[in-house]
Length: 462
Image (cartoon, rainbow, N blue to C red; front, top):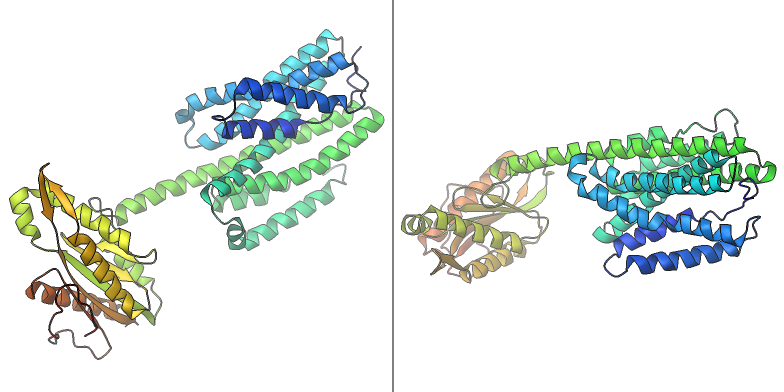
């Protein structure tokens, strides 16, 4: 007779979760049936290598049941993904946890049926032990793997994220230490103090960092609890330890779900707010920022910051609109906007200043940068060949006015824009398709006349 109290089955649930996860991420290169056979062979071989008080036949049956995790997970995952749009705004949490919970429950029912057929009197407790073990450990391991894979996929620096939240990291570490001390208490060992700090930190973090953090911290305490209870169980063969372990697994699972739900709900809220901000601060036609965003950023600029301002204006744009229509004029605005975005640095700010005017704000301290940027924009736009009305190719040029200055206060910024605008006018008067640049000092008189405008493709400080 199969005796659950004497069975020392190797806990291979981490292999289950890890292998299922890797199979999902590499599903195009791996056939499911081949993967299942390989997993069953390795699982059964590992089970045979550990001395157990059960027959080889029962060990193979247990190996089959444990290996069922993989195909059942595939099936339940496909069902969950099919209805994923119904779970918003907690879609990621549902996709991550629901297949594991459903798979573990189905797997435990099969396991319970096996124990019942073998006349085992503890098949209910044993099936609950099996299900909660698969659920708790599967969710924890999937949280860790999902977090690491997300950082690997996006290339985001993990340690910079940790440095950014140093105080939160200290809080988590302290909570882990306190939780470990509570394990020694018979009355407080079921208390999960990690739930509070993890929930607070998850409000700040995005989904994947929060998943990684929750999985790592909760798994540490969970492993210690499991080791203690399994040690007591194997020593005394008392089901009270299994019941306590089941209770702690459920607590861990609830903690994970609460943390991830809080994180994803807040992430969805932040995402919605960012979309609204993007619409408020972005010009719909060009995809560049608008004036409102420029003034917002200008107020955030520290004093004594070297700045450069360029204003670009599309030449003969009114004639283009009148001749080819406003729809074709929009195409030209979009093409010029895209060209400007491709040439500015990540620290520059490109703004649609007016109808056919664009403003570039740069924090580059290099005075030569303004010359180089102007030359690149002029040359690239000259090479544009925009198709209008399906068959008419139109060449476009722009005129540029720009200046360097040291930001001290808001009037300096306004003066720089006025100066760049006047220099743009000088470029227009001199024949267009050129840039006029100068350095703006505190003694500059905005209404003063400027030096002769540079010819095309020539750039030097006035």
